[in-house]
Image 1 (cartoon, one colour):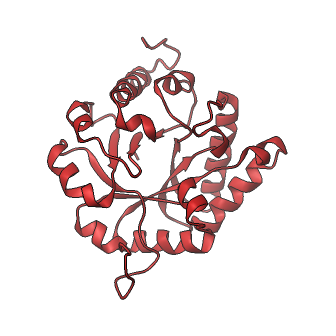
Image 2 (cartoon, rainbow, N blue to C red):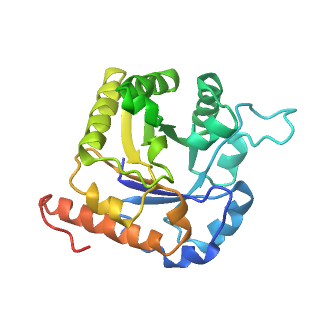
Length: 248
């Protein structure tokens, strides 16, 4: 799987930002996770190589489920990816492992690619139980022999100004990849903790980090700078010089 940047618009929109998203699609992928009502509009205003992503899907299949959006319908709309288990869904809608497993299974059955979010609270990290939390979230949903994107979003770092240190990110990546290997899962790992342009510089030398899930900054001009910096990092890696100082 290619490196990946996902723009999670949440319950917002900024159609103007779409025209400014330019990158080398041979190097990495970009997906726009917009509200479902905007899927057609986003498709009409983006370059053909930019992927469509939904922020959620129903735990139910097609049927008498008022207000739900089945994964099958998203696939028919041309959506390629779906986010499952975002911290806001877990928090505001009380989605537990059983619900998230149903959603992920429906998404896979519909032919969607899943971006599954995991993350710990500050108290978990302070008591050194963050890896146990992540382990349980991972294995409660991720099945054997699949391909999946895992977005690590430390909840304590979202919108708080707190910063995850590179060594802590490396620890999480190492464990996610170990868990994935143990059940023959092809995994891509993203970081999703209040990503901004400075995040790309801070994490540019971390091995095994495949990209970013960008929240609020995907709605403003900083997103194009995030894309530019990420592309610069990948270009340096592609020429075999991971120690080169990127011009940020």
